[in-house]
Image (cartoon, rainbow, N blue to C red; front, side, top):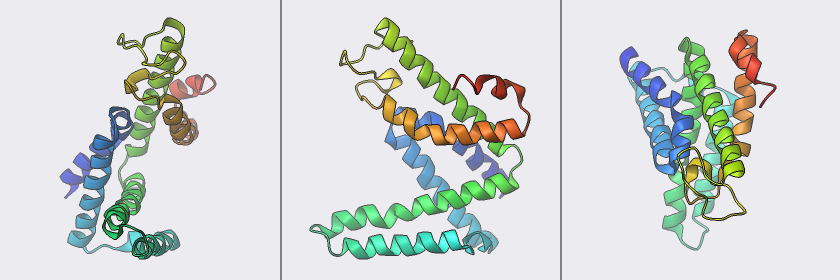
Length: 188
């Protein structure tokens, strides 16, 4: 089981890169990881991760969105979205488990997250200055940046949504006295 835990933790480390490719790979990582964590808990008969107020609150919220799905215009479409929502709660529990039990996971995840953020930020500035990104792609609109996202104009949304995670990673890295990351933090 430890070997599969190593594999899943290494896959999760690359989640920030998967976010650039689009929703498919990032959602695949979250879904597979959530299923794995549920299987792991059942196999080891260890449900201590679910025994906290946040987990209970999430389960109540999940039950609520399923319940409200029955009042929507198209019940099946609404249920198709609300039932699999549990994967996000399981994924958060898995991340908490990995942070507490897998040495080096948080450091690797932080480094990859910061590198991806800085890469998209650098590429956006590059595209703003030169009119094309570092791979030579031109934005479909002259007044908007697309960076690595091709035709989608979501670079600002990506950077603003990933920023809290990057800030968290910088704070974690600065607590671990990683001088390389401390050097780059003022630039971010």
